[in-house]
Amino acid sequence: MFGVIFDMDGLMIDSERIIFKALCAAGKEMGLENIEQPLTMSIGINKGDTEKVFRSFYGADFDFERFYKLKYKYLNELVGDKGFPPKKGIIEILDYLTNRNIPIAVCSSTREGAVMDSLEKIGAKDYFRVFVCGDMGLKGKPAPDMFLKCSELMKLSPRDCYVLEDSRNGIKAAYAAGMRPIMIPDMIEPDDEIISMLYALKKDLTEVIAFLEAECE
Image (cartoon, rainbow, N blue to C red; front, side, top):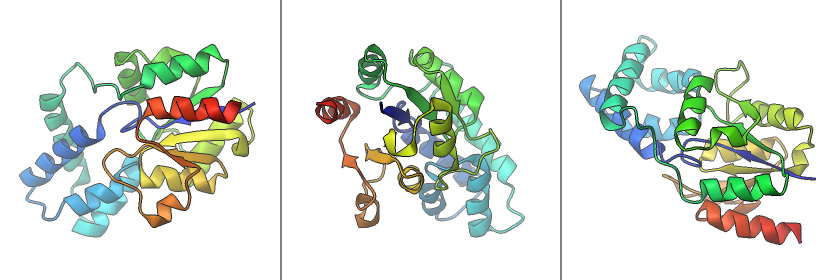
């Protein structure tokens, strides 16, 4: 028996570019220079670790809470109540796994409420029973803790878990957990370091379905 663990942002929902745009707008309003660098470093990590990244760039007195409030202001302008669009193949792969009784889970650095809301809006929430989110008190990606909690809740060995991720930090976490990281790149293509950690590299979730079918033969 194997299981599949899903990241959310940039993997199930097409959110990373929109969030990036909102954060850039927030940074511009605050007069921040070279904001693309800390933003890129923050892809795939939780709010607390993102705050550490930004304070390392802009100083210990950086007003991170104001920055995040501005983020939501611009996100509301960009997305409103409709939510982020689904990524190609997400419902198809969830149907494929569910119809075969393959255990699945969500492991996201985003807070639980936002995860539930985003997945509800694309019709994906009810496929899952296991959720490990960024506000549950676990050490965030790239540490392995969140993925290991997923495998524990799924009652599976880490080595029997495939992890679908789009970010460097997520791949590092899955690799450190002793799982099988499959990368579906979103904003950033893998470099040699990340490629060395991958079990597979696919362009979208429909390719992952074919890959898992081959693995099960």
